[in-house]
Length: 324
Image (cartoon, rainbow, N blue to C red; front, side, top):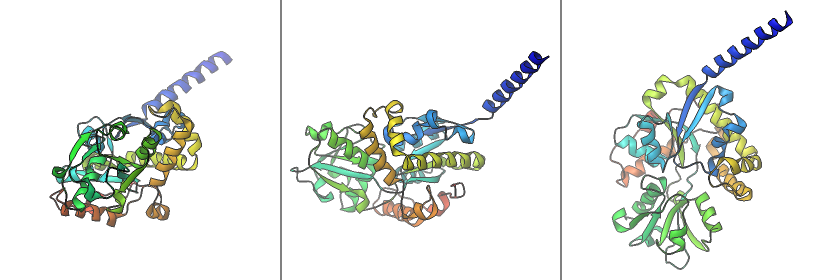
């Protein structure tokens, strides 16, 4: 009798477990990069279970720039794009029906880096030079365009060369005169022998966010409860990495393609944690937008000829799902 009761109880637990597994929703994130240490909060899911705690099976789809993240989402390979405002503006300009739902990195982390001695210290000095970018669909290229247009230059005044993600060898070896990068990229470059450099920070010209979560209007309308859980899970993961960077640095060793050095991981994570916070997020919580700043960004892109449409950010930025 006791054995039969045990068997029945075990069967009930198995059935409940199967039902629980079946109730998990899948959300696929189209990333702008491969699994690198600065996004350890996402990659730590098998260890920390932030998304699982919200009944979500999260899958990460690698990419090569913010533009590729949006393309992967539109092609059906992902549900949410981890992308930059420039790619968002340009997709909207082409008529794509998209909305931004979470401000991942409120600070602009893009820059252009040139070794001291090459005569490049300000945007005007880029004329006639060869400049490296991560990819043609990356935020490095689009933010480079902003720098150029701010001083009356275009891509026709420079030579663009794709050098790959976090690859500073071409600029060190002189194959390019300067390279468009990010704050974490610059840190890695210095570790690889970049030496003394002049850094032109795009934030000094236009401090729009670096990355946001973007979805299609149709997906947003059909999946609000799911997206609300997804954003709560992501917020929890971001808050964890801010509070526990040392733990994140350890996890990055086994979860990333570039994180074999724990000390380097820690510095990269600390740099990225800074960009995840701003006056707006400190006042309202992680993920919140500065609407006026993003509107200024859209107007700047139009004024510089990078997009043609007049974009109304209040119509394409949705804040109702951001966790309080």
